Length: 460
Image 1: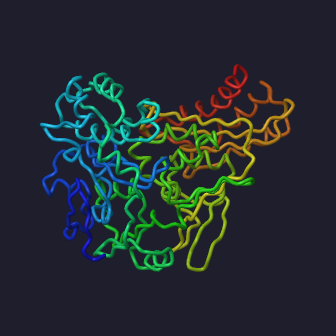
Image 2: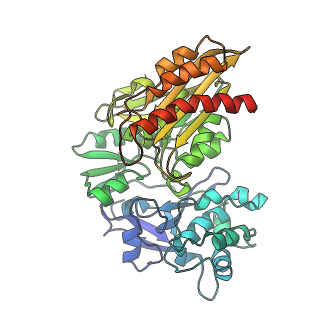
Image 3: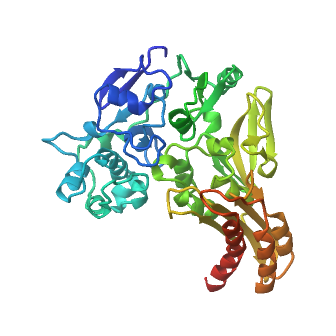
C-alpha cells in the first residue's frame, strides 16, 4: 500500500501526507478533528485519546483507546479510528458524552474529548457490558486539569449497556481490520517476519510496536530514525500459550492483551500490570518493546527476572534462547544483535508459591519507579527451597539480588532468616541520588521490602 487510507469516523481518508514524524494526533487535528489535544506529548495526560478497532480478547473486535500523540499517523493505514467527534453530535450525544454533560464532568473541556474516548472504550468492553462494572483503571491515563474527578467517576458509573442497534457495539461482533502491508517514506509495515528482518538490516532502521517509547523520543527529543519498521502485527510475534511446563508471551502482544489473556495465570504479573503506567499506555506498549528499550527502571524486567524468564530471539539466521538474567549487558544495552528481534518471552512452570511486586514511586499509579522489587519464593514445610528476587531502579540494568537469594535458599522461612537476607538486599545494586529518590532512600526501601513480604505472608 503506497497510497495508504484510514477510516476515520466512518469515512475513508488518505494518509498520503502523513509521513513520519507526523503523529496520528497532528494528522487528525490537521484534517479538522480538533477534539483530541496535545497536553504532554508523552502519553501522560490522555488529552489525545482516540479509539481504534483492534483484534479483541473477549470479542472479535474491541474498541481500544490509545494515545494519538505517540503513534505515527502512517501506522493508522488500513485501520478504523473513531474520535470524540465520531461518537455523537450536539443533537444526539453518545451515552458517555451525555453522562459527562449532565453530571458536570466536562468542566473546562480541554481534556474532555480524551476522557470521552477512554470511557467509550470501557463502555464497549464486553466484560463491562455483561457485568455493568466500570473499571476505573480505564481512566488512569487521563488527567483532569480542573481536578474534578468525582463527577467524571459518577458519569462513568452511571453508564448502562449499549443500546440495541448501537453501530459501534455491533462492530465488535465482526472481525477486526487486517493491517495491510505499507511502504511510504520513513515507514514500512512488512507482510512477513522475513521481510521485516530484511528491512531492519537497512541503515538507521528501527522496529516499531506500540510507539510508547519511540513516540516520546520523537516528540520531546527530536529523534528521527531513517525507517520505522512496524512489527507488532506479525503472527510470529503474537504467540500466546499456557503449556504444562512454560508460558509463552509473544513480544508483539500489548500488556493489556497479556493481562486479559493470562487472566490470573501468573499472579506476579497480575501484581505488576495495574501499576505499569496507565491503561492507555498498556493498550499500546508491548512486552517486547518494554524489554527492547532495556530501561533500568522498567517495571516488567524485575518481575520477569524473578520468574526466571528467558527470551526467544529471532533473526535471519534463526532463533536462539537467552535467559533474561544474561540479556542486559549495560545501561540500555543488551545482547540483541543488529537485525535481531525478541520473538517471545518464556516463563517456566510451575510458579513459585509466594510472589509479590513492590513498586515504590511518588504516585500510586501511572508513575516511574524509584525502586521496584519482585519476589518469587518457594517455601515448603517452613523452609525456603528457592528464592528469586528481581530489582529495578538500583543499578544500570535490572538485576537479580543474588546474595539475598543465597541467604534465603535452604533456610527456615522465619524472622531471623528474613532479617539477614533483608540486610543483604539493602546493599544490592548501586543506587544513586537523582530526582526520584536518594541512594539512602532506595537502600532503605530494598531492606524493608523483604520484611514487608514476610509480614504480609504471616498475617495472610
